[in-house]
Image 1 (tube, rainbow over the protein chains, first blue to last red):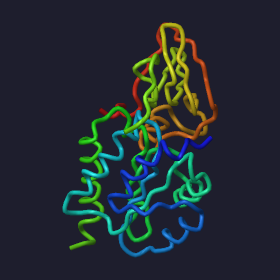
Image 2 (image 1 turned 90 degrees about the vertical axis):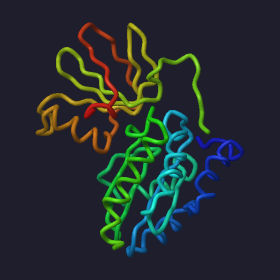
Image 3 (image 1 turned 90 degrees about the horizontal axis):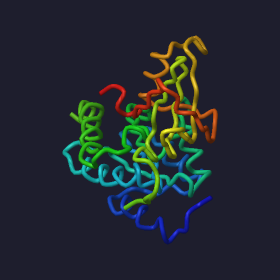
Image 4 (image 1 turned 120 degrees about the horizontal axis):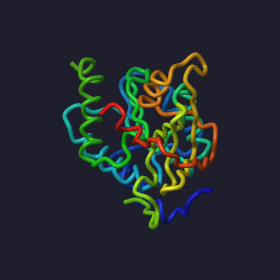
Length: 143
Length: 92
Protein backbone atom coordinates (compact mmCIF):
# COMPACT_ATOMS: atom_id res chain seq x y z
CA UNK A 1 0.00 0.00 0.00
CA UNK A 2 1.47 3.37 -0.96
CA UNK A 3 2.69 5.71 1.76
CA UNK A 4 1.18 9.20 2.11
CA UNK A 5 2.64 11.51 -0.50
CA UNK A 6 3.44 14.09 2.17
CA UNK A 7 5.78 11.58 3.81
CA UNK A 8 7.67 10.57 0.72
CA UNK A 9 7.90 13.97 -0.96
CA UNK A 10 11.28 14.78 0.66
CA UNK A 11 12.58 11.36 -0.42
CA UNK A 12 11.61 12.09 -4.00
CA UNK A 13 13.16 15.54 -3.80
CA UNK A 14 16.47 14.20 -2.57
CA UNK A 15 16.86 12.79 -6.07
CA UNK A 16 14.91 15.22 -8.24
CA UNK A 17 16.96 18.08 -6.79
CA UNK A 18 20.02 16.33 -8.26
CA UNK A 19 18.48 16.29 -11.71
CA UNK A 20 16.82 12.89 -11.63
CA UNK A 21 13.82 12.53 -13.87
CA UNK A 22 10.93 10.84 -12.09
CA UNK A 23 9.35 7.99 -14.01
CA UNK A 24 5.79 7.76 -12.75
CA UNK A 25 4.12 5.69 -15.46
CA UNK A 26 4.93 2.73 -17.68
CA UNK A 27 5.04 5.14 -20.60
CA UNK A 28 7.60 7.32 -18.81
CA UNK A 29 9.77 4.26 -18.32
CA UNK A 30 9.49 3.09 -21.90
CA UNK A 31 10.36 6.53 -23.25
CA UNK A 32 13.38 6.81 -20.97
CA UNK A 33 14.63 3.32 -21.76
CA UNK A 34 14.08 3.73 -25.49
CA UNK A 35 17.13 5.96 -25.67
CA UNK A 36 20.04 3.54 -25.86
CA UNK A 37 22.86 5.89 -26.70
CA UNK A 38 25.06 7.03 -23.83
CA UNK A 39 24.83 6.09 -20.19
CA UNK A 40 22.04 6.22 -17.66
CA UNK A 41 21.65 5.67 -13.94
CA UNK A 42 18.30 4.43 -12.75
CA UNK A 43 17.64 4.59 -9.02
CA UNK A 44 14.80 2.53 -7.62
CA UNK A 45 13.89 4.64 -4.63
CA UNK A 46 12.15 3.31 -1.54
CA UNK A 47 10.92 4.39 1.86
CA UNK A 48 12.85 1.97 4.03
CA UNK A 49 15.35 3.75 6.25
CA UNK A 50 17.44 0.59 6.65
CA UNK A 51 18.85 1.12 3.17
CA UNK A 52 17.27 4.01 1.32
CA UNK A 53 18.32 6.50 3.99
CA UNK A 54 21.93 5.85 2.93
CA UNK A 55 21.22 5.18 -0.73
CA UNK A 56 20.09 8.68 -1.64
CA UNK A 57 23.00 10.56 0.00
CA UNK A 58 25.32 7.95 -1.48
CA UNK A 59 24.02 8.71 -4.96
CA UNK A 60 24.45 12.44 -4.37
CA UNK A 61 28.08 11.98 -3.34
CA UNK A 62 28.83 9.61 -6.22
CA UNK A 63 27.49 12.12 -8.72
CA UNK A 64 29.91 14.77 -7.51
CA UNK A 65 32.78 12.88 -9.12
CA UNK A 66 34.30 13.56 -12.53
CA UNK A 67 32.68 10.62 -14.27
CA UNK A 68 28.93 10.49 -14.12
CA UNK A 69 26.14 9.05 -16.25
CA UNK A 70 24.63 11.10 -19.06
CA UNK A 71 21.07 10.65 -17.88
CA UNK A 72 19.47 10.15 -14.46
CA UNK A 73 16.07 8.71 -13.67
CA UNK A 74 14.25 7.33 -10.67
CA UNK A 75 11.17 5.32 -9.94
CA UNK A 76 9.63 4.97 -6.49
CA UNK A 77 8.97 1.33 -5.60
CA UNK A 78 5.72 0.79 -3.74
CA UNK A 79 4.38 4.14 -4.91
CA UNK A 80 4.43 3.99 -8.71
CA UNK A 81 3.79 0.27 -8.86
CA UNK A 82 3.29 -0.03 -12.62
CA UNK A 83 6.33 2.11 -13.38
CA UNK A 84 8.50 0.05 -11.02
CA UNK A 85 7.26 -3.14 -12.64
CA UNK A 86 8.04 -1.73 -16.06
CA UNK A 87 11.57 -0.78 -14.98
CA UNK A 88 12.22 -4.27 -13.67
CA UNK A 89 11.18 -5.66 -17.01
CA UNK A 90 14.34 -4.12 -18.48
CA UNK A 91 16.51 -6.38 -16.29
CA UNK A 92 14.14 -9.26 -15.80
CA UNK A 93 16.81 -11.75 -14.74
CA UNK A 94 17.58 -9.68 -11.65
CA UNK A 95 15.31 -10.23 -8.63
CA UNK A 96 13.24 -7.21 -7.52
CA UNK A 97 15.13 -5.10 -5.00
CA UNK A 98 14.55 -1.67 -3.53
CA UNK A 99 16.31 0.54 -3.08
CA UNK A 100 18.68 -0.42 -5.85
CA UNK A 101 20.77 1.16 -8.60
CA UNK A 102 20.98 0.09 -12.23
CA UNK A 103 23.67 1.55 -14.45
CA UNK A 104 23.25 1.28 -18.22
CA UNK A 105 25.74 2.01 -20.95
CA UNK A 106 24.47 2.15 -24.52
CA UNK A 107 21.32 0.38 -23.45
CA UNK A 108 23.08 -2.48 -21.69
CA UNK A 109 22.89 -3.09 -17.94
CA UNK A 110 26.52 -2.90 -16.84
CA UNK A 111 26.25 -2.62 -13.07
CA UNK A 112 23.58 -3.34 -10.51
CA UNK A 113 23.57 -2.65 -6.80
CA UNK A 114 20.85 -4.54 -4.95
CA UNK A 115 19.43 -3.48 -1.61
CA UNK A 116 21.56 -5.82 0.45
CA UNK A 117 24.71 -4.05 -0.73
CA UNK A 118 23.36 -0.77 0.62
CA UNK A 119 21.81 -1.89 3.92
CA UNK A 120 23.62 -0.83 7.04
CA UNK A 121 26.45 0.87 5.15
CA UNK A 122 27.55 4.46 5.39
CA UNK A 123 26.53 6.74 2.55
CA UNK A 124 30.23 7.35 1.85
CA UNK A 125 30.77 3.63 1.24
CA UNK A 126 27.75 3.41 -1.04
CA UNK A 127 29.07 6.44 -2.93
CA UNK A 128 32.51 4.92 -3.28
CA UNK A 129 31.11 1.76 -4.86
CA UNK A 130 28.93 3.69 -7.24
CA UNK A 131 31.59 6.21 -8.24
CA UNK A 132 33.94 3.29 -8.85
CA UNK A 133 31.39 1.75 -11.19
CA UNK A 134 31.04 5.06 -13.06
CA UNK A 135 34.81 5.22 -13.60
CA UNK A 136 35.11 1.57 -14.51
CA UNK A 137 32.11 1.24 -16.76
CA UNK A 138 31.70 4.69 -18.24
CA UNK A 139 35.09 6.38 -18.41
CA UNK A 140 36.49 4.37 -21.38
CA UNK A 141 33.51 5.30 -23.50
CA UNK A 142 33.86 8.93 -22.49
CA UNK A 143 37.51 9.19 -23.53
CA UNK B 1 15.84 10.71 5.75
CA UNK B 2 14.13 7.38 6.22
CA UNK B 3 11.83 5.33 8.36
CA UNK B 4 12.85 3.83 11.67
CA UNK B 5 11.59 0.86 13.60
CA UNK B 6 11.83 0.64 17.34
CA UNK B 7 11.76 -2.52 19.39
CA UNK B 8 13.20 -4.79 16.70
CA UNK B 9 16.46 -6.66 16.60
CA UNK B 10 19.56 -4.92 15.25
CA UNK B 11 19.25 -6.95 12.05
CA UNK B 12 15.76 -5.64 11.35
CA UNK B 13 15.54 -4.67 7.69
CA UNK B 14 18.83 -6.30 6.81
CA UNK B 15 19.04 -9.12 4.26
CA UNK B 16 20.52 -12.14 5.97
CA UNK B 17 21.59 -15.68 5.20
CA UNK B 18 20.38 -18.30 7.66
CA UNK B 19 22.23 -21.60 7.47
CA UNK B 20 20.72 -24.47 9.39
CA UNK B 21 22.66 -27.37 10.80
CA UNK B 22 21.20 -29.74 8.20
CA UNK B 23 22.58 -27.56 5.40
CA UNK B 24 19.46 -25.75 4.25
CA UNK B 25 19.98 -22.09 3.44
CA UNK B 26 17.44 -19.29 3.73
CA UNK B 27 17.94 -15.78 2.41
CA UNK B 28 15.54 -12.99 3.29
CA UNK B 29 15.08 -9.66 4.95
CA UNK B 30 15.21 -10.04 8.71
CA UNK B 31 12.10 -8.68 10.35
CA UNK B 32 13.04 -9.70 13.84
CA UNK B 33 15.19 -12.20 15.67
CA UNK B 34 15.51 -13.42 19.23
CA UNK B 35 16.96 -16.49 20.94
CA UNK B 36 14.09 -18.67 19.81
CA UNK B 37 13.35 -17.69 16.25
CA UNK B 38 14.20 -15.64 13.19
CA UNK B 39 11.48 -14.02 11.12
CA UNK B 40 12.34 -13.44 7.48
CA UNK B 41 10.38 -11.46 4.90
CA UNK B 42 10.50 -11.97 1.12
CA UNK B 43 12.60 -15.07 1.64
CA UNK B 44 14.02 -17.82 -0.53
CA UNK B 45 15.20 -21.26 0.52
CA UNK B 46 17.86 -23.44 -1.07
CA UNK B 47 19.00 -27.00 -0.50
CA UNK B 48 22.40 -28.12 -1.79
CA UNK B 49 22.05 -29.43 -5.35
CA UNK B 50 18.59 -28.00 -5.86
CA UNK B 51 18.06 -26.74 -9.42
CA UNK B 52 21.50 -28.14 -10.28
CA UNK B 53 23.11 -25.55 -8.07
CA UNK B 54 25.42 -26.05 -5.12
CA UNK B 55 24.91 -23.96 -2.02
CA UNK B 56 28.11 -22.09 -2.80
CA UNK B 57 26.87 -21.24 -6.30
CA UNK B 58 23.50 -20.24 -4.95
CA UNK B 59 25.03 -17.90 -2.36
CA UNK B 60 27.42 -16.44 -4.90
CA UNK B 61 24.52 -15.51 -7.17
CA UNK B 62 22.49 -14.24 -4.19
CA UNK B 63 25.36 -12.03 -3.15
CA UNK B 64 25.56 -10.51 -6.62
CA UNK B 65 21.92 -9.73 -7.32
CA UNK B 66 19.71 -11.00 -4.49
CA UNK B 67 17.10 -13.75 -4.50
CA UNK B 68 13.68 -14.46 -5.92
CA UNK B 69 11.31 -14.77 -3.01
CA UNK B 70 9.41 -18.00 -2.44
CA UNK B 71 7.87 -16.91 0.85
CA UNK B 72 6.39 -13.60 1.93
CA UNK B 73 7.14 -14.42 5.57
CA UNK B 74 8.99 -17.27 7.26
CA UNK B 75 9.44 -17.94 10.98
CA UNK B 76 12.46 -20.19 11.49
CA UNK B 77 13.36 -21.80 14.80
CA UNK B 78 16.79 -20.69 15.96
CA UNK B 79 18.16 -24.12 16.74
CA UNK B 80 21.70 -24.83 17.96
CA UNK B 81 24.05 -24.74 14.98
CA UNK B 82 22.01 -22.17 13.08
CA UNK B 83 24.19 -19.42 11.63
CA UNK B 84 22.96 -15.97 10.69
CA UNK B 85 25.07 -13.66 8.52
CA UNK B 86 24.47 -10.52 6.52
CA UNK B 87 24.21 -11.31 2.82
CA UNK B 88 26.07 -8.11 2.02
CA UNK B 89 29.05 -9.29 4.05
CA UNK B 90 29.40 -12.79 2.62
CA UNK B 91 32.31 -11.83 0.42
CA UNK B 92 33.99 -9.64 3.02
